Image 1 (cartoon, rainbow over the protein chains, first blue to last red):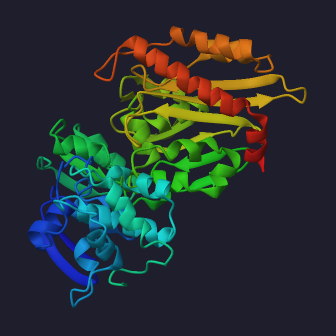
Image 2 (image 1 turned 90 degrees about the vertical axis):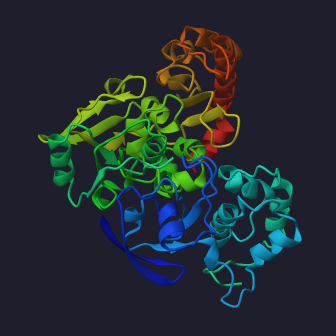
Length: 161
Length: 292
């Protein structure tokens, strides 16, 4: 067993994990943060995408023990404490950017990274950014429309609406 | 779809990592983990010990001058994609690494990991062979230098010992303003290429091609230098007949059939990718821009 300490959505967590526990399983099972979804568990579907030290990663391809000392952001950290949705989440809702919702947490975290770096991506850049996230409801058109509806304004830290 | 149990060692020095490998036959290095973790989740492999080298920050970094490029093995693919210094002397890296997996995997995946995994369709082994890179591997007796042609020994089989770790990749960049082209065909952006073609070209003042390198990936069991194609172009001005001969000679490379298609299909795709990459590399307005 391994001791780890990390910051998840601005809250410190310490715990003991088995070495083989993936970061995604740690978030879901140990911390109860079930917003991060696990689809394929071999790095293809992108549903488990979270941000580690600001960079999007596959939560199923990284061990929890490797997140020692890291700053982790998950979909739970996007909305404000009072439940007000992040404007990207709001846009997904308005533009029908989700149907079953399974891919949504990974889509959102991938896009948060993109928008922080480039607040005004082109449609091509948006499509390229989400090329690593599968949506099986075939909702890409509306996802892209949702992102393009919020471009042009800087995206700050998690919780910044 | 969970990895089997293993012992986890977070190496704090390179020596510790090598010693752990030397004493444990089925220990594996954990670099970016973007292939290894997937294979473990699928239970294709069962290493008893994982040696995590992510804390060996001295293995990450890019130094690029017109004389020499050195990329540390733990340099993330995303860092290679976005390095202005590397793009200045070897712009093909930016173009090709952009096609490696997806942003999420490039944020973790490393050049050393990609070279050691040695997927025949992966972009970084193709670029390494294109540039005649030297691979630095460090074992119990210190570092040694391996020519990339000797490093690529067969399908997904790097030419290093079980107790060696790839620590860096080096090459001499081509002359400023050299032409380059990289194209690949995949079913989806970021998927493994069904065929890829990488080209570098240097011309004399009278536009004669003095030096050309062509590497084709994805079609055989390893990335392959298209030597007969290079010979077809060397000494010419890159005219239509020389290009046609280089494309025609693609049939001399090795092709492997799989569920994407047969050998003829791969040859056809490889030829198309090479035609596009040659068009880019021979387009002097484009190479002029690369020099700026």
